[in-house]
Length: 520
Image (cartoon, rainbow, N blue to C red):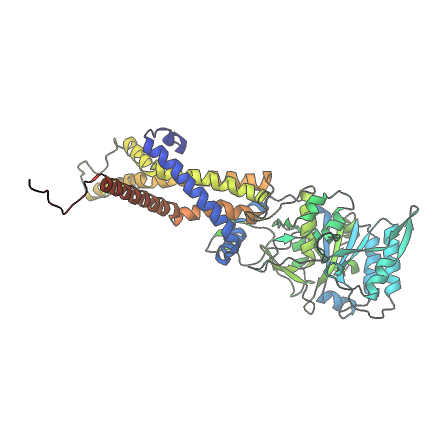
């Protein structure tokens, strides 16, 4: 007993014309609301709340392809205490950590640190020498830069970027710049998107500035210019690397032992009662810098497994240096995980990450095409329900099926049997009333899940897109916008028909005259 078979039973011209009229109304209203919602703060805020609730359903099955190739190494306050340093540390500290990392042959190292100061650091030459040795060993080194924002590079940064070394007969830079740009959402302050090519401040025609994720990905892969030019819709993985809990539960983490976060997302987080209150652990493997001192408990093989062949993103997580971001699912996490998650998306989706966008931005974009498809499909379901009165048809069909079941109509020997008979009668009436709603809810669920799959796997759209454009038409039905518009349209047409009839009747009436006929 499907909704389609019920629609086929409708044979009256009025029902069919009503379906097409309601379909047109809901499509027009749905597209108009989808276009206008991007300027409605309440709609944008609700979209993000819904995505944070339901988005992990898809990200829980996010592949671990990229996670297994990335390690995030952070300097925290206990690292400074372990090494007897204060922030900012001298460049000699970073030089020594870089040389220690080279012992395990990582694929590349990105220093998520900005060298803005023109300070005289006697260790500058040593740090550059270590980077040159890394380049010769086949380990490219990158440092963060705000050159894309038009800031003049410091003498320290210029010295790092100007040094060259000969590798296989070619002069290559010892250190390259990876340009930073944080896209903080204006509604919930989370990071939903990432610029692969950071927009240039020079306007049209200016060269793009590759981001850290783009720099690292292009070491071994080709990144299409069209992909790099568009902001990437970040898909935040929620199944944390299991090794994270090993050190987060150890006595060397800040605050001592204990589980400060959950290893993965569970369905219990959707429950309003008894859901976990702790945040999710970061997705990629996280190591404090002091692991290189062998005080963490990782042996030589453990360190080699965590670093060899991996993209190492080296940054900070200090109370005095708040390099943190707000992830939609993880909450506040160290800033280096932003670049790690962007690189993870590129690796997991083979250089074709998910994209974002709004309806009409641009009109020929994938988000616009999916909006039209989603609004059309769901509007057809809503129009069929209203025009063919599907709930009443289902109720009548269920009532006919249950007509032979007549609980409560027989004589009973005692009060217990009479009570059970009344309960059975109430159950029968409940089935008759609930069956239409259950069937329609099932139809809606199947349609929505199909559209989510189409948007995510076929159109390659991020979660913010499908949350809004799949659920918005159903919200319109909840507000009865289409019903009210249809009723108003019917009243307007009836009024015009009455007005036309009145005008035509007045035109055919005999003309009145006050003159009496003359007597002969």
